[in-house]
Length: 486
Ligand code: HEM
Image 1 (cartoon, helix red, strand yellow):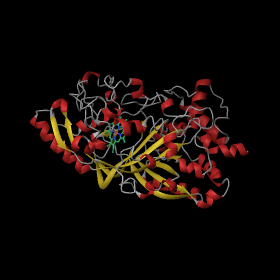
Image 2 (spheres, protein in one colour):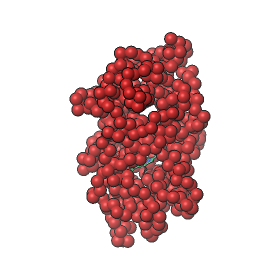
Image 3 (cartoon, rainbow, N blue to C red):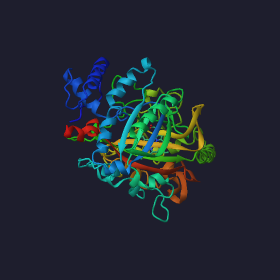
């Protein structure tokens, strides 16, 4: 059984436990630490789990290092297993991540964050078993490329996703990815060099994605269109500052709940999504004119596509932009807006998590909630931030990353069913998610029937450039074949 969050830990015990683990290179699962029962269980669990899942790594600079295993390493029995064992101590576990965050002031945030994830093809060539869990494995093992039609990515004549970059179209050679993050650019370069050196003769890097988090004065990440992102972020640690409310999916929705070596593993969905910033601005301007004509609120017209003002204020009565304490930004639902006169039914966040009983669709709240997952996206092509808006290169967007236990029941449910349905979250809304699928809504037009707004022509605002489904192994999993041999 997974321990119950939220977790409250004594940092002195955490440090002592981590020191003991370093001194005795044993599996955290088999090592009995000398602490009281509740802390001991939680620390064992956290030391097993990779970081960035329960808590964002928080570093502003990152590199996603996509790799394939070298042919010679695949051919040599045990070579990849030895590599996994060797790098397991470089991977930042959740307990280490927690300790690093608590000591940030003392060591000036100099520690890198490192995580490794593997595709189903990567597991196959490494001759490691696919996860033994009965749920959540099907989508992972088929891979994202085979699902691109379901996900709504346009195909070319060869039935391959038209806009994907070659490296993602060739998923037979896409075996895994390192996520390395640091507080500084030079620190990041050093941490990546170490990963490259240790991987020599075993892995070959086939793509680097440079990633950033750009924060506004309030400490919130901003996405390229200029909206606050990462507001609906779960917090699993009670003594963390939690400025923006709590939306915590149960751990069963995030981690595999097995008793075996798959315990404390997860899946990661990665999508590279290019954002058409000029197109978004142009659409906002045409929307502004319609709002003015109807004497409706002209501020942040793009709020009607997202479902929040730029500063994160939700479009529900009782909330006003600029006036809300950050802690309240998640503390709302759409029950008082069943007529969608405040927030269109088809706004991105309402499609993603509609926070209302879907009476006419008969989808019980439990099913809506059980699709939620942990988002940990970063930006690509973003340079700096000015007046709370990212300054971006011509090619920029979101490196969408989300952790979950069942890709089919969670990510694919949102992406393939809810975002792409004109009958969701209510029948006859006739609009797909305008951010991701606007041009495919009724006649390529955006309307807000409840306010008599539109129709307005809408072009593509987001173009998928590729992605993959990954398995996020636990520490025991990384070390397991070696332990069996020893
Ligand atoms: C470039 C593409 C995207 C952009 C610009 C974008 C932007 C945003 C923004 C600004 C928010 C509100 C901030 C927040 O609640 O944290 C949000 C929320 C959210 N997005 Fe996206 N998003 C994108 C793609 C996706 C995709 C592909 C998915 C899933 C398949 C997704 C799922 C969600 C979910 C689940 C929420 C939270 C809803 C809630 O709990 O209220 N987004 N997104």
